[in-house]
Amino acid sequence: MAQTFAHTIKVLFQHCDPAGIVFYPRYFEMVNQTVEEWHEVGLQHSFSQMHLESGYGVPTVSIGAEFTAPSKMGDVLTWTLIVKKLGRTSAHLHIEAHCGDQLRMTATPVLVSVHMKTGRPVPWSEKIRDRMQAFLNVEG
Image 1: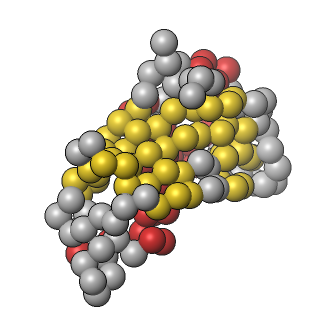
Image 2: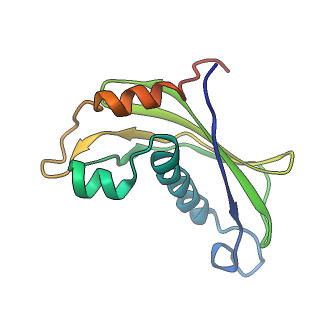
Image 3: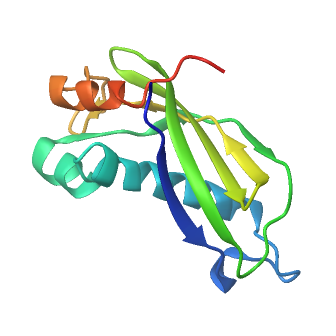
């Protein structure tokens, strides 16, 4: 059974438009925060370790999104992440944001492992790939 990574983000004033609901580009910042938290907590390899020590990065090369209900200032969103497909140099993710039982947003980013100096794709390290495998869920 695959693991699901989860964490929470409280919707703050900085995330909202004048109507007090999340301005949609801020959701993408929260998606990135979820990916960054997953690397640090779930994969035990923080972005600072990755970029500054290991010399590689994981840019998002494509992303799909669906906004199903608005989120308001003060809402606490639970973000979940699973890996849908794991390639030699890429990872297809499925990320959802819920407030209670209500789905608010779904994102499907594709990350690619790249060498920071060349910007070219490189295979996942064996350690990171093994840790990503724990979150691989090809069903559903």
